[in-house]
Amino acid sequence: MDVLDWLRAVVALAVTLSLIGIAALVLRRLGMLQGALPGQGPRRMRVMERLSLDPRRSVVIVRVDSEDHVLLLSPFGERKLARLSAPPPPVAEAPVLRSESQGEGA
Image (cartoon, rainbow, N blue to C red; front, side):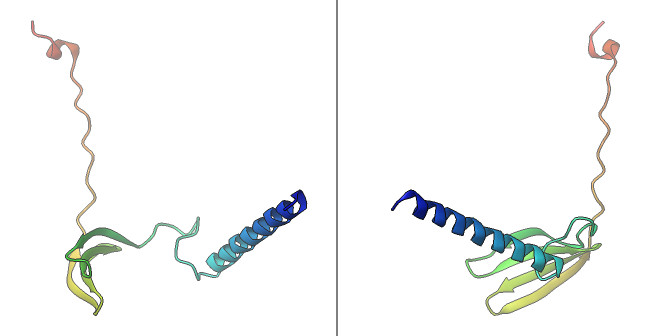
């Protein structure tokens, strides 16, 4: 195999990868691929937690807007177990500042 064959193989690989990338961009623009585009705003749905019960079944908590849904996933289908209101986001506590006179014993 000479240099020309190697160059031809590298160019063919680059063209193939470019076509795959262009197809992915077109499908995303048309809304056929999952995932938010920049500028569309925050996502409304997200998986908060997943617990495997056994190799075939699991329980997931899915947050949609301000509600949590508890779902059982199995090979036989999905089942909604509960619908809960989402807890409020945690509030960050302000750091406690100590003055130098409080930190040292007098």
